[in-house]
Amino acid sequence: MQTEEDFRDFILNGHLHYIPNIAIDCAIFGYQKHQLRLLLIRHRNMNRWSLPGGHVKRTEKLEEAAYRNVKIRTGLKNLFLQQFKTFGGPDRMKFDRFDKKKWTEITGLPSWEGNWLMDQTVTVGFYAVTDFSETVLQSDISIGECAWHDLANLPPLEFDHEDIVRDALHAMRLHLYHYPIGLNLLPEKFTLSEIHALYETLLEKKLDISNFPKKLITLGLLKKLDEKRSIGAHRSPHLYSFDKVRYELALKEGLVLS
Amino acid sequence: MQTEEDFRDFILNGHLHYIPNIAIDCAIFGYQKHQLRLLLIRHRNMNRWSLPGGHVKRTEKLEEAAYRNVKIRTGLKNLFLQQFKTFGGPDRMKFDRFDKKKWTEITGLPSWEGNWLMDQTVTVGFYAVTDFSETVLQSDISIGECAWHDLANLPPLEFDHEDIVRDALHAMRLHLYHYPIGLNLLPEKFTLSEIHALYETLLEKKLDISNFPKKLITLGLLKKLDEKRSIGAHRSPHLYSFDKVRYELALKEGLVLS
Image 1 (tube, each protein chain N blue to C red):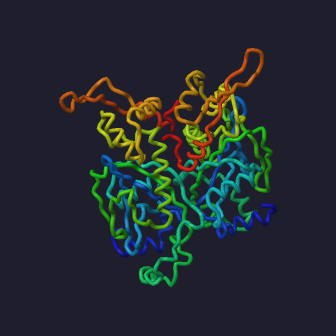
Image 2 (cartoon, each protein chain N blue to C red):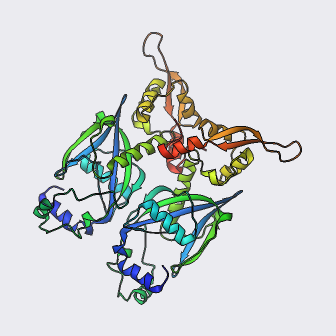
Image 3 (cartoon, each protein chain N blue to C red):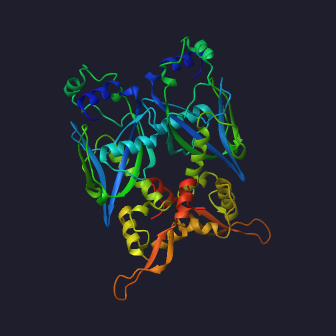
C-alpha cells in the first residue's frame, strides 16, 4: 500500500480481493554464530510489536500469500517458509484496545461493527530461518518499524503472537532433525564445531559435541566427508555436509527417516 | 442437525454462529494388524466420498471444532487428533458440480451467489490413528454413509481431499518417530514383532526387523524391558514399551529428541 487512499480502500473493500476471516503470520528467525533473533514489525498506530503477516488474496495459495507479505513487509526474498500450525479460537484477537476515534477518522464509518477486518480471524503460521546479517529491512505506509530482536529478550507481542513464536520454535526444532534447515546458514562443507554451534543456538541448549553428530548421521541428514579443512598448525578438523539427496526426498515425501 | 429445518437454517444463517471461510477436515486412519484404513463419509446429495469435517463455531477453538465434528459425524470419541496442515487456494473447491435446482428447493433462494457456505474456504487438517475394530459408526441427516475404506484402494474423493490424505500420511509418518502414535494401538507391553507390524503397516513399507528398533531406541521413544512373554515352548520374546515420560515431554515441548 502506497497511499492513505489505498489504505482506506483496503479497510472498506478489501473483502472483495482478500478472503475474510483468514490471515497468515510469519516467525522469521535470524541466525549468526551463537545468536538467535526474531524479526518483528510495529504497525503505525499500534503500541506493541507483532509478527509480519497479512491477508490472503482470493487468487493466491496460502504459501504465496506468506511469501508476498514477508517480501512487502520486510524486503526479504528467497526464504524457505514452512507452514507449521494454524491458530484460531474466540480469544485470539482483542480489538478493544483499538482507538475507535482513529477508526472513524480513517474510514469515515461511525464504528467497525460489521467490517470484514474486525471479524474473528484464523491465522496460518509459517516459519523460516535466515542469516540476519544478509537482510535489508524495509517498511511501508502501514508499518512504522521493522527490526530484529534477540529471541531471549523479546518485547510483549500483539494478540497471540507469543504463542505463535513458541509453537514456531517447537516446529523448527522438530524439523531440525529431519530437514537440513541449516542448509543456507552454513558453508557447503562445514566443521563439526560449526554445525554444533548452529544446533546449540537453534535448540537453545547445550549438546554433547561427541554424541551430537551420531544422531544426525543415524537419521541420514549428515554425511562425514573424507576431507579436512586446515585451520592452522596441527589443526585440521574433518568436514561434514548435509545429505542433499535425502533432503530432496524429505521435501518430496515429507519424511527423512525410512 | 436433526431436521430439514435445522439444515435450511444452517445454510441461510450459519455465518452468525460459525466463522465463514474456515473449515476443518479429519483424516482418521484405522489400524489392525497389517491393515490400514481411512474413515470416509458421503453426504446426502453428493456422489463422492469425503473426509469427515465441518465448520468452526465462533465460540470454539479449532481443536474443539475438530473433536465435535468427528463425534457428530462418526460417533468416535477419545481420539488423539493432531493438527498437521492447512489447505487453501483458489482451486481447492469446485462448486460447479452442485445441483442448482436442489439448492433452490432446499433454501428457497434463486442462487447461491453471496451465500456464506459457497465462498472460498480454507480448511485446517487434523489426523488421528485408531483401532478400527473398536469403533461404532453413525450418521445424521446430512450424512448418507460413513465407512472404513482400505487405504490402498480408496474411491475418488471430493474437492482436494486426496491431497489432504496424502499430507496427513506424511505428517503421521514423520511424527511416528517422535510421538508414540501406537500408544493406543498396542498393549502396554508388546513384542518386537507387534511394533514391527504396526510400523510396517503405518509406513506402508518393509523394515529390517533387526535394525528397526535401534532407531526408535536411539530416539528415546522405545524402551526394551527386562521381561519376556511366554508364547509357547522355547518361544519367549523380549517385551518393549513406549517411554511415556519422554512422550509427555514431547507433547509438552513439541520435541522428543534432545
